Image (cartoon, rainbow, N blue to C red; front, side):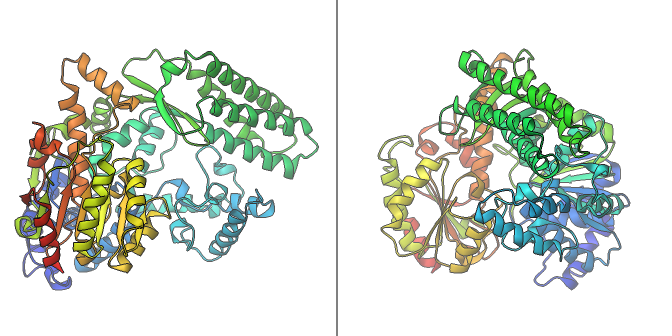
Length: 638
């Protein structure tokens, strides 16, 4: 197998013959050989592959040449689509591979024709946006083969219409559904069961693990090998799925579904209408107990607040009343049975949030402007994840551009309970000393000082001028982003796009199309964003991305770490921040012709001892403390 893989990636191999501009790269070949070995021997492999290694082809080629079935999981839907629609077809063609491929997403991504028809018949709201979007989805429904809502032009990830036209695990009728034979989710799963290579994402992988755990039918076929790209996200996503959460959003969805059935099927059942209104009021009242703005905190502490407990008991009691009324309606409409079971399950979940006695879990809540979510999250997923891997007996490959901290992979391996047969770190082929400059400007205020936003505006204006726009400014908080945005927009001639103004995809398209724009973003723009060439010449980062110290999950993990006699800063906060910073830095140089300047506005890189850990973990760029040098470098790029 090793000989075959080396030949595929050689100067005379099929990749060189069919892909424009392909040149053999030793790091890519080394990685591909290791992946082929892990797939053949069903062993564990961990690879940190620097940007530009060509890691995607390095794992896809061995997967296409292996004998068994491979599931490839990515961190985001964007990468999932790129893999399936661009990289995989290129490689299948180049290698003349005969393997069947399939794309499988979570259920929320597919059109549910049953719910669409239900809502087109009874428009659920007088919101003109929703009505307009319903019409767009109805048109899409008459043309689509896959039912994948990503293909529906004009419907973004956050479109208001989505809850009305997709299904959730709670409201899906399964085999009882009149549209079951034509169901897009069912078709997608059948395709996946039949394929040799299935492209999924991490959320779907863990949702499936959680379902398997509870003994239900599986969404995802079992495989001989699993490859995780963007693997640095895994332990965080795993802890969400291995825990439990109760959200009032789901309860509001249940109320809306029941109201639709009440109006269409049993309008004379007035008691049902009244009991739903009463429950809706008590749910809204519970949310208001937490203040107007969004917040998060320790759920145990909130349980000592008598008013919150009373509001929660009222929700349970009103839900119980809805349940009793539904009992009377069961023989009136066959559509009642499913929501009837949901109401019962929900009541059980709400009663369980009073029990906070289990150890090894964090009990925390989060509110958005409209909803409350209560979470019970395990502090350590390594034992569970390791058992899951052992149970499958499959090969496992974990890769990302950012897995190591201080040139070691031990933090990543420990977080998932991995004991890899082989671990490797393959360097990026980019010439960082010549392609990039890292600037840590002198004389900046401390990162939390009141005059910091002003200092960032001043410095950013200079850099934007030198770079002729073409800047990403990445922030660790919305507050700082908005303060800097106010200062910038009035003083520059280039367009400024800010996260939240429109969907992420549209902002990126506008930024790239303009060619001289400035983009301001927080967490979701730190990773998975690929802007190549001269459109992006400068990345400015406001401060080191340490998680907010008041984050309840982080606090619980740190207490747990302390109880084990370890230093929580060194074991939890520092590694997380290093990996987040590496992700942000990775936006700058995306191919061998890119040039750019990275500016980090945080003195702690120089004044604190741990600053060295960050600097050692970054690519080997030339460093300067002079903003003048940074401006000169940018002017030369032009």
